[in-house]
Image (cartoon, rainbow over all chains, first blue to last red; front, side):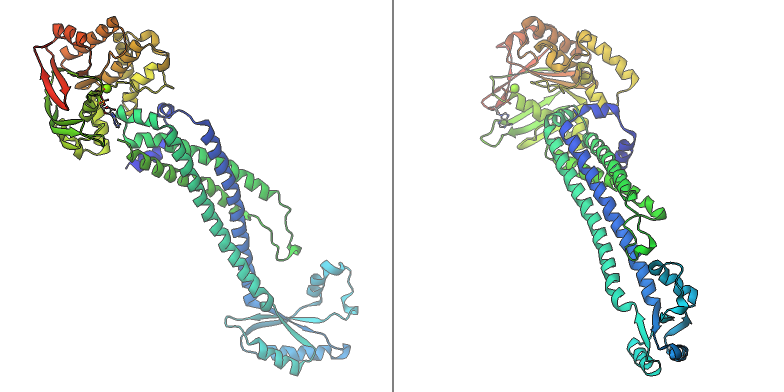
Length: 300
Length: 225
Ligand SMILES: Nc1ncnc2c1ncn2[C@@H]1O[C@H](COP(=O)(O)OP(=O)(O)O)[C@@H](O)[C@H]1O
Ligand SMILES: [Mg+2]
């Protein structure tokens, strides 16, 4: 009941009750600054988690699905080897789909490196076969052996080998990002507890007088809770805006950037950082309330 | 209203008060006297729940103080008006706000009560000082402001701890008159003082009982005054 009352009290404000406890300039600024800095850091931790999460998902999907077979053979044998390789691939269990890339597709792949006017027919460019596996996947060692036997110029390039450690690094990074957010929250709680204790100690005489004239603990606690919650929210809002601005101003990573898909927010993920001031409010509310009731209980 | 039954108190060393029994009847007027350091303030603090007895039982309005929760104590303080020995003001608030503080903290600072506030300030003669800060007041003005704060919740009991401690005689009499008026309105009054002249002038106006703390005991002083 009184918790709800406190929440309402914080939201509504009470000018008279705010005046009862004299303002303490020093802790006010420190609280504001620290919660701002913490929110700024939290924005980056959040961006890191979301970006690495995205990365892990994208890579994980591709990793599960595709491989390529590259065939470089002397001019005359090329078509025969492509056919042989296709035959092997089509009869391999665990492969859902195989497809020879068209010249246009190959040109598109090479374009970033050689420009649009590449005469692909005139060059000894290897032919590419895209392999899409089904749910269970195939035995890549076995396939490699069979390909060498049927089409000596075929090289199986499954991305799994180098992507798998990257995927697990990305998901590890996401976990670390989330852990950082938790740590930032805990550090904010600790900081607000210290600041609230300092304010409570500095106002011991005021609190004593309030008790003597019949103030209940909730009333006194509320005066402090309201103050610290508002400071934490204000600081966190400023820190969050600054953090979001800093991220928005990061040079954007293009698709050619490859796996550096950009540390940032995409689409509706931009709403996530707005949760930070709310979390700061909740943390400040509980930290101050707990500190206030603990120190009030020591008084008569 | 307030009842002490075989109450003892010690701050940790030897007993300061021992075996004290007393019942404060509604509408009574008591003086509490004794040399400085005898334990008058301590006794009064036991009465309004600022201290708990180390032995014996204190009950207020029928409830044992020891069984009261912190909110019960807060409510008790709204029913007992106290003029503290050192006034206990909030120095950053004006006299008016300090006097209204019990209303503010109990959520009763309504328009109606605010009208009463200016009546109350003029009753104690502080209308002109309403906007001053407590440190700007003289000793007598502080005591009257403290009395105004003590009565603003219309308590049934008013406890005053050396309200005339360091103010001149004329001002002391003025304060006494206010307390006598309150008693005539039916309030129970307890005044700690070591000023025997004050007690004599009060006896001319009301029927007052005089209690004395001597040798850790509470005695009824009578005809010798
Ligand atoms: N908080 C305290 N801790 C320890 N001793 C105290 C405390 N308050 C008062 N005393 C001691 O108790 C004695 C009685 O104090 P008090 O009740 O204030 O007497 P009075 O009001 O009659 O002058 C004094 O000797 C004083 O030093
Ligand atoms: Mg005293």
